[in-house]
Length: 242
Image (cartoon, rainbow, N blue to C red):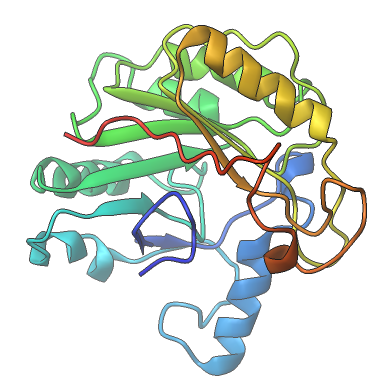
């Protein structure tokens, strides 16, 4: 099972990545990969160097129980070093497992759009982009909107600045969260509140994942202590799972 609040399991046919924007500064996957490498975990022999694991591509086919999978929590499926043939194989597995939902999140929205140009994503694939701030994140939304997908979503985590004029046309879900871990940057409650209110106006499900290392009162404490309550509510909005 996954500790990520908005999914049930993770599936990592790719591990490792490279940083592309401010949201990557304190990458949790990089820290975790180093830890797994030190433990001798299979697949992390090269630490956080990007690696495609063909032996993992078919893993979800063996699970009959309907499951929500986060694809590549430890990488980015649309990284420039992941070739189209490998992405094709991942999509074939997704198509072959209609009992599952697969959540795919990327910061490489241009590659996402290019890959799906002329092809539709599998019905059970939810496609999302990271939107950590206006400069780097917001331009990704238009690339995402060009992709023909059953569900398009935004992950505004870590939320690093205000996003007061989001265009939510064609967007089916928004996740918001603060940063955790060493060096975490604070999230202003007004930033999250603005996104919540924009989602309410647009009829888009809103999911508040966490405060992270900094609470609503601006004090640093453990992620667990800060919790998920936002303005007195736990927001667990999600798209309907077919």
